[in-house]
Length: 170
Image (cartoon, rainbow, N blue to C red; front, top):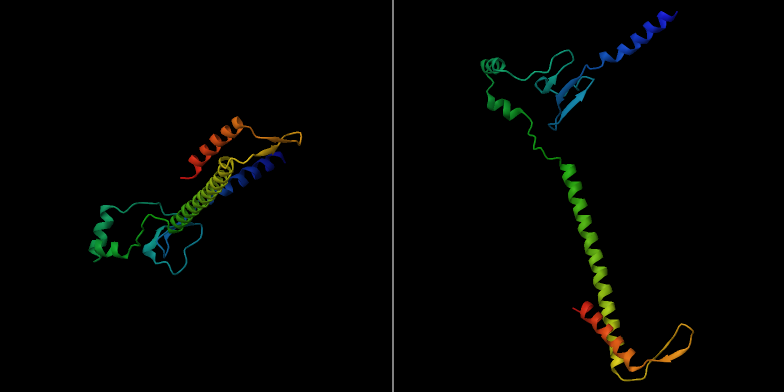
């Protein structure tokens, strides 16, 4: 009984070895297709590159002579072969869309930053105009009491506002 189980296991392990029967052909769009099933009937025999049980070989000088003898020239073979550009159109389109989205995102962020700078500029100019007017100003401190701004604080605040104006109002 033990030997039968071992034999069954070995037999089951060897079953996948029959799977490498692969077909290889060039489809209508010029792409190579690998499959374990035969190509559709719309694919001509000249586009079938590999059949199951047939080794994958490259055309040799002998086969070139044979095709020349059959009356097929290399120009005819090249004309009938599909043109492959090497560029995946879908991938190129996706890449272009991603680049455009990134560019749009940067422009939106730049627009927001410009709007914030313009707002800061307007506020700083307004605050500086209030400080330069000479009117007595006050503010509320942390205890909730009103305190009058003295000349030293007014000069420091004017200098701070001037640096904001210089940075944001260009």
